[in-house]
Length: 358
Image (cartoon, rainbow, N blue to C red):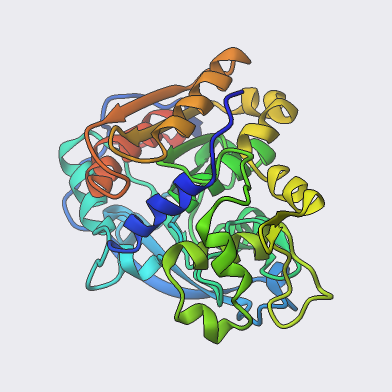
């Protein structure tokens, strides 16, 4: 496997900061969109997040897109797409009134109207934390975000909305940090999701190195207040350490860095590497093979291009069926278009939908 230095992730995330009964699926559209979907924003309690050392609330904002027919067809049930946002981003930037990053409701509506997508519920939890991103990982410092996404959130949505509570009708997708979460959770929890789509996933390679300038800057951060004044790469380094090398004996940040005073800390490096999907992949090949469908994409001008290409190569080498596509663009360009023209049609094809009686 070709090593990929972690600094490429931090270069690219700086760019990100500037944007902020059941039947088999069919490709033909079977329902007509006569109205716009509805967005609601609720609070979901995460038992898995209780007691996290960062001090983040365990009651999380969650944006939910309900398709046009949800309010009129009261007996109809729907597949669910869980959508994960990137670092220093949040659900409101996708589903809120201002749509700072992506106008997700408009993209979904347009896909239903123009691109042959089928109606589904779309759910995005707010994973913005004190350290500005959870990495969708399991940590005493950030809380067990793995379990929150795969258990607490799924259980809540299935019990409060008219979902098809089955893995075959449940998909997972995400951008950047959310793309990382999609790969991580998809490979570990094939009993929860049947199909996954990772857009420009970050943090794929086992590559925590002492030469990253952000490492020295992160070593100087002593509090959450200091972090507010830091550059994006330094913030991302602290968030990664909180997620992948938590340390309850190290207040007030409760984390260990892979390098201190320019000296690598081998045990901490090993903890980071153990959370890199390219290192995890050989252990989870059978899980990946259980997924109905896997898709990856990345822009040709994205600094993560090489790492995503390596993931494509490794999946191919292990015989894991998937699709991989590049497009002209940077890490943040065209995400709304990808959601409309690629992500929604992908899940419309690969999730299981209820039969629709005419």
